[in-house]
Length: 384
Image (cartoon, rainbow, N blue to C red; front, side, top):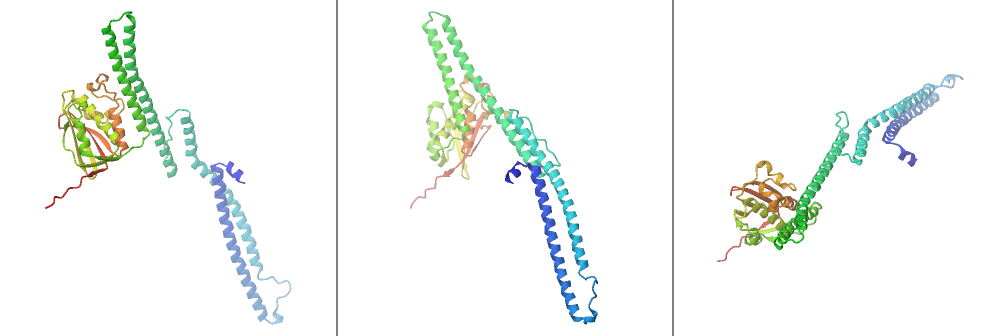
């Protein structure tokens, strides 16, 4: 029985289920009606016996006179026949209606199965068209399925674009290295100056490749949501260290709130260094860069300002895309891989924060990010 039921499709199961419900309802009604008629027969027999006992023997019913119970028995037979016919018609109607309802209900599922088969074949473009006459549940399921396909299509498109961009970025320095080596190989006795020049070019291009590969590995780990190692960071000395570090050039420090921030210090340092390097490419070697922070309601906002050319409003969201460069100062010759801001955004979002670009009071661009987990330092009361 279980094997037969398992082989039935949705239409067969729903048709049999509706038929079973209808048949059960008829049986229940029939049992109730039959019980009432049996009770009525009992009452009639009781009344007949009482009347017979009260009448004189001469008034006793003659042989062959019809019993008062005969109409009740005939009514019971009629009810049984009527219920039998009605149950047969209702059962047949329930089977047909159940099959039709199940077929209509299963239609979106069949289309969804066909769409899934097409997607399994590698085509992510098919979608399930909306039908106003379909049940709400079926429309909701179709919308969820289409939304899932949209996200998959977008993810695969971004992956293909990312692979294409990464291949192009790697091809450029490799082509430069190959060209320099080919030029050097044409001279059977190259001069020492030429050898050192080629050596410098190759080392520089290899450094670019190493930075790009390291950034790609970082993004891959962030995409996998690598676990953070948050600790309580004393904020003021932590941020002041970036102003004292000469590797990023001269950095001015603005307001720095006193307190602690719960974050991963290694990842947070990576964010700030990427933003400072981005600002330096914007502003140039002699440009102004300012690092400041503010806090409110347990959230910390860190801002890096520069006096460079700024970022147009139309580009301010796209600058966080991977390999995106919006200004001439961000070309490949500037040393940037086009991944610094993308890495910064991934780390900030992994901390539960957000990052954005806006105009700077210095006249250039401001890149700011906001993180939760800030605790202000308690105010120390002086003693008398």
